[in-house]
Length: 485
Image (tube, rainbow, N blue to C red; front, side, top):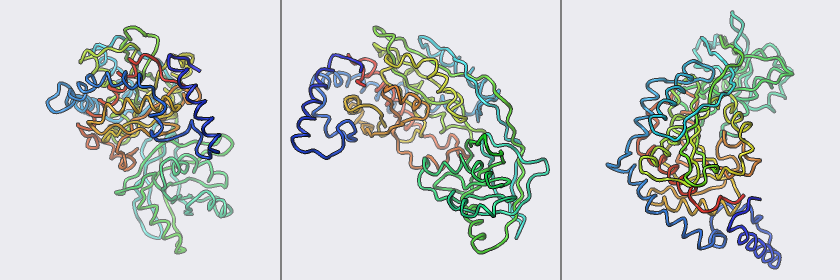
């Protein structure tokens, strides 16, 4: 337990509430898991509320800077557009990603951060190569396809085989005696990303258990205009590796309809995909040194790498750029923090959170000094506030900080056990974690597809996302005490 000035107050209040709960035969949720802010008025001392609201004028100046005719209006979008147009997609393990990392290091130095540096990370190399997929019987039809990241390729002559279509792993198991020598097509139902993504991740390993030659999965998206979506897969080391690719929602539905009618379907799949061992990449870190508590940190982050389709503007160029621009904005406004503010631009996120794990392994001993870790990797649409993982006291403090952002409607705080993929590796340390909460209902329309372009990004949304990270970082960087944990 990290002790701070107000800890005794919180402990005393916890005891009172527990006693009260027992006396009332309380059967509601445990006190430490409430998800809304209704109890925050009971938890936060007036002194902390007053301290937070003493920064309202500074937060207003941050909002003014990104507002109409503000000194930072449109800056994040323009910087991102220049970066995206210069480098395009930035796949882990490629020379292009490393050139983009060099570019970012030079740019951040020009922004006059106190310190800009790299930390090396090992990432896997993978090449897509040429690929195509056709239905050749009972009629000829092109199937739009994207090989899944880290998939192996087909034999040089490709694979031509009969298809079997299933909607779940359970259904696959039920027809397992019919799978050998076939291409298994998964037309899984899309419920939500975290639930449905297991089919992208595990389909090849599951089908290979029964002798499948390859798998094709319905793209993990709620919306499609005949556009396939890629993403990484996982192989089971105890099962043969087979090629795997994503097809469009429309084609998955068509093949399933045909299969249910009893039609014989033959598919031709060709993939030149290959794995190329490990290589070195880098996390990029920019810091504004704290003026009185430099060993304590507030960290904002996003990842620079992307898949090789689209240009990675949304996933996660926008998140990376609101992160470093948040601190650059504070610098331009002359707003100083007691604690060090750091922006981390992760590498290798798409291929297994490689940069996140490397940073954690090197810096986990610093957990007691990290006030909060923030990440934006679920879109940079209209910001609504933050998602949060931490105890009740921290929840209420962050919620109060977000109230300063009510002028732009970014004052919501919700519970989320993993508010960002890269920062989730810190979950067991009890460091408070937060992700940008935004109106991202269309995020998975574009995710890991050729639709991830600058046209998805909106200048005003990026300005406001920058302001959210700037304001939260600034206030939490200056509060007298660190967030409780």
